[in-house]
Image 1 (cartoon, rainbow, N blue to C red):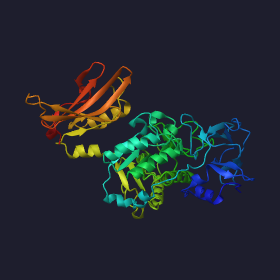
Image 2: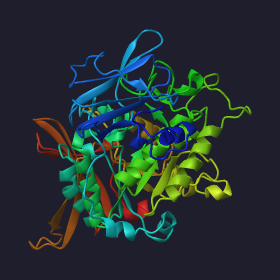
Image 3: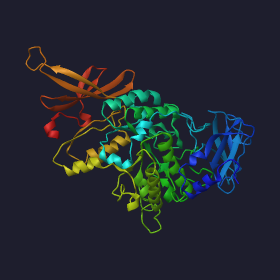
Image 4: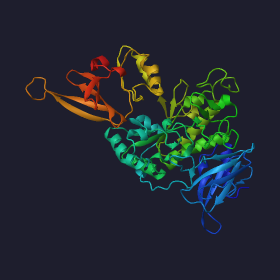
Length: 517
């Protein structure tokens, strides 16, 4: 029998149908025996020999705060009176091999900005002012009848050094001025490795502290809604990082991943795939999606790497994957999970949307669950570039590629992958712009065609990329459009040498709009 945790809630968690497991598991403020504030900790670790809460409040002493089993639920629980908001903590989990694992709380609402510990604290508390916006959101399918223009952004790269609160002003004003209807932010769940851009997650309920507090992220979304801008977040339920403090072998045994490496390993990314046969994993991820949609008021989630979930052989060679019970490569448990997830989200008010980032030809991705589809509102079309270029081989395409290049001018791996997959395969791609995006600016130059000293027409230049290598070196790339000659030209300006040069490395050239379109 559980002393502190709701047994009915744990029953639903273990059945795989909980959409609010975060309200029972994790760290929550509670009232002690004498009316004092305490914190209740609950964690799912069914195969552990023992579990302790260790943290800055008990000097990381494994013996100080031993947890008790909550009956046969697989959950351990305890209340601690000395813990204070913001204190660091982890779970010390004794395994059946005698090891003691130090794990972050999978249900923590807060985490260190550049560390591996969780932070004591209950659900974020914010006074929302977007009621009118939510009331007017309608249903998810209403989006089919409204224009949608989405600005995709990685918050840490848009303008470096800005937090949630600063971005709530600068980024949202920019998006509104440019006529976008939605912002899509790359994952904001807690992740340890900066270059992953959030796609290798350790905390599925904690907003990354890189940009501020959870309440400041709520303010960011609230202000977007006040401007009529919807906010979508990339959500990563396919796989998770192998970091020691994360979900891997959480209690010494495979809990979140499949025990067979042919099902759990994702060699392409160096991560582990979630095991959708495990009902508790289904509840964990269902609740995570609902947490961001309900508690943070996100308008939608772009579900990342759906293909990796649908296919057991995704990214794997023969012999590296395990077929389903019928001998096929479809992940039947993931299919069932998607239907369960989309059914739950469809029942929410406010027109919440799920987008499938799906790169294959899997059928019925957006067909309703009632018609044997997966139930997504939209499919995020990853192959549109190849589709367009193959469909119109006689047209010339201008591909504005915000990729990545190293300081020496060579492609990073993702940039090379884009070049190999798209550019090199299509002779009708005429322009490729590469570089770290540091914001854009515009310049207009008057041109004197007749020599009378008076401007005859204006040439518009977009400063689309600035690369800063060090304090004495940088490059400014300019995309120039001349409305008279109807030509486009890309030039690179070096502030050090005060010299403009043709950007031949990136296949840039001068050509006319008629040639292009």
